[in-house]
Image 1 (cartoon, rainbow, N blue to C red):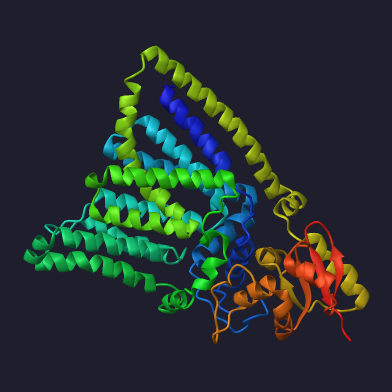
Image 2: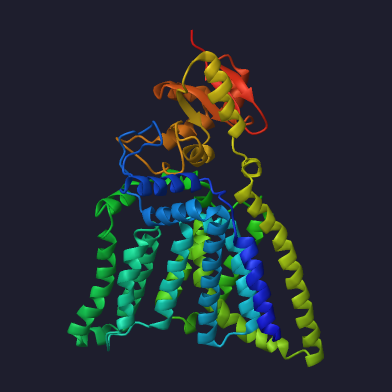
Length: 495
């Protein structure tokens, strides 16, 4: 086996080990239950049956195909094999994407190896194998590759661009990110029209045919179980409040040093590379990548798009520099460097193995999974068994921690949540449950009455949360029934 083949094989193994994840995403539970409902009832779940707030809210769920696949694989293969399957598909897709771009620009293999490593270190933070995001990221790579391979021209109709139609037909039914994909399509055609305006004017018929493609790509997004309601839902749920309170929508936290360092490397590489090779890139690419770089300062969600779109300019810019760098060393020194790289990759695989084992245990050992994820199993079990049985009662309305909502929907379907991962954008009659949730947590002294408005009878929160401290230390009609390292339960005192 050649040096480079061995290096890429080791990197592939390392990537699989660090990308693989057990069902630890807070939203996995409700995705799973939506898929389960589809299989058991042979229809989509449209009503809000998982929470007692907004009981009449009908949600146009753009994740339904993803949820069906997640449920079927986890139900019949088990979480380990399902996670491994999605991991292998995703890792292979990233390798093929970067190799395809590298081949197009004759990139340095050193730069390709580095970019693959950087990409997977970043992707490992996204819990991709257990989220619908796995499909959306693959579609983003396909869209990027298509537009790089097919420069827009108005002299002829390139049939490859008609692939946009089936791409968006599927994308609109697996993840709401298809809207970002359509934005990229819009910029691609707009920039192309600006660049070839004279040719476009001379060939009216060809121009008309060419411009029907993006229109058709948008129209096929209406081919979903909800029709135009999906778009109305996305527009209705674009309220900015959620973007200031959901972890992946806020700016990156410098307190997480590892992730912050990776974030800075990606942004710096993409920015310097974009500036350095801007004359070699088409206008649409410069506009789109520049736009998402700017957005990534406001929201870390867009880092994934910067990472994918930044591959091409980084390959172009740094491959030349890498070639000059290697010319300074003799073959003997380069051979030693290659040997050192293999040793580093072997140790990386060993380190990745420890990460992998921890994730496998989350798939096979429920107690380990609950402890690792910090889920309130002991607290809820106490509430349902010892307390409720002794009082001969059934659970009333709970005010639960947002991050536990998906877990509760999955593992305790009889307990309807106050809030969960589906609901930050839900609004009805000018009212938002998520805003009420945040308001109570941020200022319980002035807003405790909100709990009464929802007839809340028990509260399930981390013991060190501000609301827990307030209920514990103030005589406001609540008593602490249960407390452990993960959760506290407070119940209302009836007069």
